[in-house]
Length: 218
Image (cartoon, rainbow, N blue to C red; front, side, top):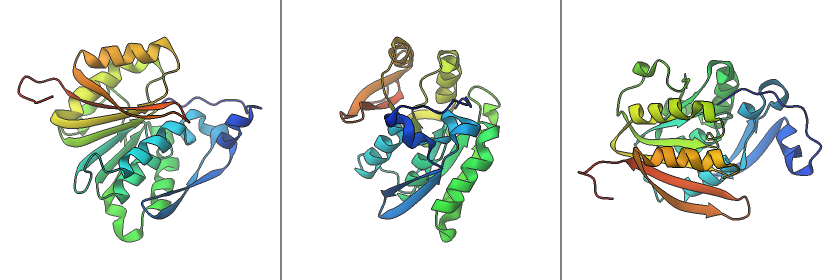
């Protein structure tokens, strides 16, 4: 996720992004996540796409228990934390400048006896991918990570590296601009893509994707 400091917005709808912390209830637990808009901008606040993806995960339509899961562009870590609480073994990733902040949120919200279910790791899309096992994950998660056109090729390459023919990719996003649909078109060249959930209140879609393969039943 890009680290872009933003000036404080006067819009009421965005005022929650400037709170130093936010609280949610998922998996029968109260979760409190620190935010730091002034220092890290978009990388350190909880966006609606993350909330909607967590809600979708709680529906249980994708089995996470005991699965190897990786979250891309994790930001505050909410999605990865919820996946870990649902029984997955999660690698929660972002760029290096965000890792200390991200690690603090993970440590604060996962019980001490379950800390091993989630690890925080550096991942800049398209770089040093050999640090991660090729085709080594059952589920790949991403919330609001499709917004910088310059990263689309690297993001797609990262997905191709991480995914086997059986990997499920879940991307939650708001379709704001033409470039968002451009990424989905790019993704469809290599992956099957299905719109599996829509939250009309937040205008967020959840897309389920998997590698195109003649041997896989779509």
